[in-house]
Length: 344
Image (cartoon, one colour):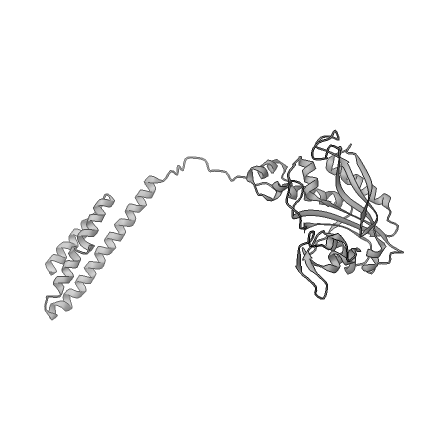
């Protein structure tokens, strides 16, 4: 047996495989269930006890050598196959990275913020989950106001120490928190995401984005509000954009108004987006109601202020002539790629 092991050791040492078939034949010949090593271990059972002490170690070393030889040849063949199958050509230039693009809502949001920053407005943010006081009561919403109905608001928890807990329906709640935490004057805008329980369509969604503004100081007038918003429209949509104010109602402002601009899609001629009126409403505004100031411990006899709020989706629709706001939340790469040139 010792002689056979020596002979097989020499054969294994000198063996080189050129392909997978030859290597498999090697494995079957030496390591298979009916191979040489299996036969040697069967023969090992018949030798004397004295020979076993010597041959046992030799036989185990022989088996380990055969297994190591097979594994080394296998890895070598796999490496060669990978190299041959590789399509990598080191002489070719590298592939460039595909550029991403900012979301159109992010582009418009940033542009709005930059315009108001130049006018001295700071940026304030707050939580998206709000209690009844900050979302409704402090803003002069009576108990029976329709906005408190389940059809408009996503309620999370009914009752509690601070009233109902809900997803905020506007970023006006940030205004309340700011007024409670500080003292006038205040001049800030509040961008953020808001939620309303509405059917999803080309013109409405269950969540959208707002930018609200607040300015409180002594002797603030409606004329200040109109001039600020007129300047904002000219900066965002371009000089020559027409503006009009219509009387309206909001619980937290008095007097209140809605502001329209001439439709940038049809240039005021009339289209489906503006309902063939030539005008599109882009925001609501008004003078802060004295009750709201008092709710936030601000002397309404000394201080006055104005507030406004706009939907970023509506502004983006007009600016980029996008007629279906559902596109903003579908993450369609084909749609988003259109704004690569708009990166700022």
